[in-house]
Amino acid sequence: MIGMYARGCVKMNLYNMLVSVTLERESQNAIIWDKDKQINYKEFLELVNAIIFKIKDRGINNSAIGIALKRTPLLIASMFAVVASGNYYVPIDLSIPQKRRQYILNNSNASALLLDEDVKLDYDDNKTIYISLKDKSGCTGECIKDEEIQERMAYCIYTSGSTGNPKGVMVKEDSLVEFIHNFSHVVSIADCKRVLCATTHSFDIFFVESIFALIKGMTVVLTGETDGNNPKRLLDIINEYDIDLIQMTPSRIRMICHYDPEMKNFDKLKCIFIG
Picture 1 (cartoon, rainbow, N blue to C red):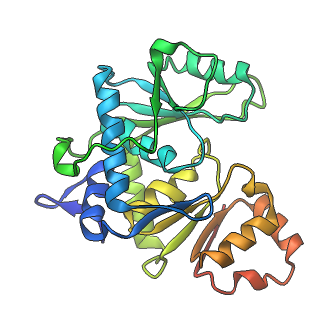
Picture 2: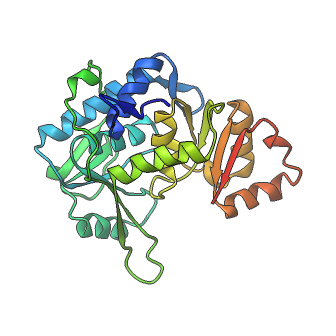
């Protein structure tokens, strides 16, 4: 089992799991996005480390950090980086109204907001950390002296707020590690090589399509901003990139079944998670 146990059978945290799998698969594609763009595991880990350094340079610790990034490897790298830096992330969907974004940032008492360098939001410049795919630390995991798994917060996701203002739900890192460990025992995904990542990062299940998939040594195929609601585009991606594993809500899988009633495009899939 990749990245689960080491150092005298002590459970690793998420960052050290990533380091472990990178040592085995450094030249393998970690993420494919925007049609033909690719980043391998070694490059991805260097990107994670670069973001960690930027956060630590600000002296931020044990705080909420907002993530309002486009769908590129920066999005997933920032999640690893925020947790590894001793903080927890708050996903911010760029498509939601500005007033709602501001409410989430204020309510979570975010100490910083991670943004793509070409994105400008109405937010405190002193709390904004701009990051780029060009950011590289030039080092591997040995450069980051991270602790073992502990009961620290990993993220806080805000619900839709259909009955009022959105509510923040906090999840600890050790819970995510236990999820990875137990999920691997319940479901066999050893033969899965490529996973479709079509969920917005403001939903919990994004974790399975991104962080979990990378820790298990898969290649994440990250869809574009509008692909998730386009059944033809999703099926094209599944076929073009030889996707093995997909995860979808009942409403999304129903949408695809209406477009392709015979589900011929699913013939090559090895795992379908619906929930």
